[in-house]
Length: 249
Image (cartoon, rainbow, N blue to C red):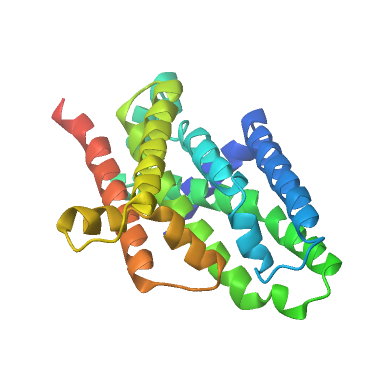
């Protein structure tokens, strides 16, 4: 366990000791702030939607999620392979699983820290409204649960992509293409009429807009939680197998 925490702190420090980490946070903060400027304009007219739902229906949520996760994860394995420190790391008394989980945990912690300013934005908007029911703890908790699960899913994909290559740019492109593909499939699923066939049911599992919309409205569907948790475990398992493949060469 000590080795795991040491690796996690090492990876997390890498984000804050580089300019890239601060650029990611600044870009996310700009998009969040601009989205809440749009929300304040909408709140000039009465609306029954909670603040978290108003934030979700702006396009900025998906911009932050799809664009920042590839940049966060691209360096995890690819940079170490490029600089030659990966083999040195793997000769230390740690298992492949510990290395993968530590890098994933560090990236996820940085991702959550990036989203912390959202709480401040929510409180500012809440202060400007007179409806006490527009924001409560349950809505905030469910929204952040959705942010955590979707972020964890995309970060696990990014970990796998970074483990496949020595190039950070290629790793980011693989992760971005995957995220964009899921986004487009989710859009397709939201446009199809409800039918009782297996194709529609499969696409229904990729209805990410409706699933995240439920989280933003304070609805936690266990099916969505299980699906996203399964995606995280699947890609972490694949990442471990990719890391282990160095022994086969």
